[in-house]
Amino acid sequence: MENNITDQLYVEYNFTVQPTEPWTDVLMSQLGDLHFESFIETEKGCKAYIRKSLDSDNLLEGFELMENDFVDLAFAKADVPPTNWNKEWESNFSPIMVEERCEVRAPFHESRGAEYDIVIEPKMSFGTGHHQTTHMMIQFLLEEDLTGKRVLDMGSGTGVLAILAQMRGAVAIDAIDIDTWCYENAVENVARNKADKVEVILGGAEQLSGRSYNAIIANINLNVLLNDVKAYSDCLESGGVIWFSGFYQENIPTLVDACKEVGLVYDSQKERDNWVALRMVKN
Image 1 (spheres, one colour):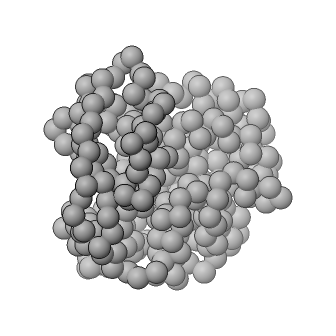
Image 2 (tube, helix red, strand yellow):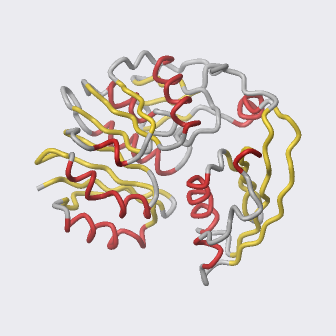
């Protein structure tokens, strides 16, 4: 796959969201499940981009958020001229530092000598570290000793968390994502960071059959987490740790209750702008 993604045709959806908080973030998270690849927040909502080949007139038919009584959504869409998306990303991508220990940067940024220096090509996969959920997951990983552990990164996006898991001592990491674009991007980023203990896998929870892990990272969205939580528990060894994120504070009881049913017990949490990350342990 070439590094420069040029001359691909995209469609722009310009969404108006009322109220904007927290529904713009919810919207962007759910649109990711429909293969939207990048987002730009606006004063009234967001712009979302999808490949023209994946778009259709009824794409949002039955879309859950369109029928939510607590939010008003409207959108207009238009074709986007052929664009060098890498150049667009480069003009808007800045490096981040987490806990003064882990830097996530693009190849065109100078390293600041962080303890964990992760280089991510800023294409359109989720997980550059800028989003609140990825930031909190990085914080959790920096607190955990993964020496000798087998780790699953479910919904791996760019692969940034899987890469950090290896840096933190994990000896085998499966990075699984259902999106082909994320899969290809993660393969490149894993190679770029010489993360030779990471295996990138295309697929969903069906890929977990017969696998076993000491720790699981699941940064996706609430609906997917609730649907697949039993599959996660089944492949997590007793005493193993699982981190969940991709949802809001008000969703904590729902997820915690679902976890209890499959033997996962609440341990601790982090919060960032109403987003939450939970640490759970298997009985």
